[in-house]
Length: 252
Figure (tube, rainbow, N blue to C red):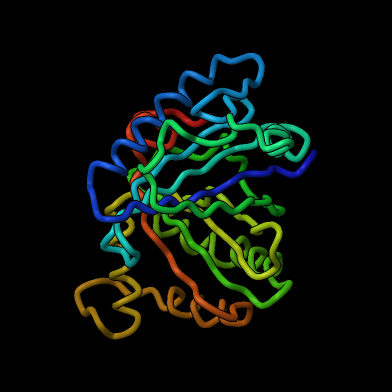
């Protein structure tokens, strides 16, 4: 079985204008739903490549109060067929730098976009099985050079069973490709389970005497430092209506 290849993109909207992320996510989910019926990729004017093999799985509005510059959208793409499928189609549009490569339909809507290719690691669930959920937890971890696979193995074998007891479903374990210092994980979770997990961690630290503690939660943070070298951050993401990970949509 070939390796699953995905793409995650963080899109920033500045100056602060609350309509821009809404307009962007509405535009994106609408045209990608249309692409689901395409039988062949097409390079278009204004929307770059249109293809079923470059599949928008998640479109999220980032929860601003969880610690990042507002406003932000995050998108998650599945390259069907891996390197030789959707990824190849995305690379081919750069050959010759055709004018249709550029997303002129959304000129001036985005301030910046940061894309990272993701490679699934052993034990990573297929993205087609990712469940619809109220929230997604997006972890970006800077690891020691070359330690991404070791860190993700520890997440799968140690952290994933722990978070599963707290209502988190592991949806992605990814090495960030073309660099050797970043790993990404994704988790589906309800708001109630997210809050209960935070309280269990607080209680374990002696900061909440009204909730049952779980000392394994802060213990994992210490264990993770065996692999981490720099910033580690988790951001909560709200699935946008119309994407496949939004509540009301079945997996696949």
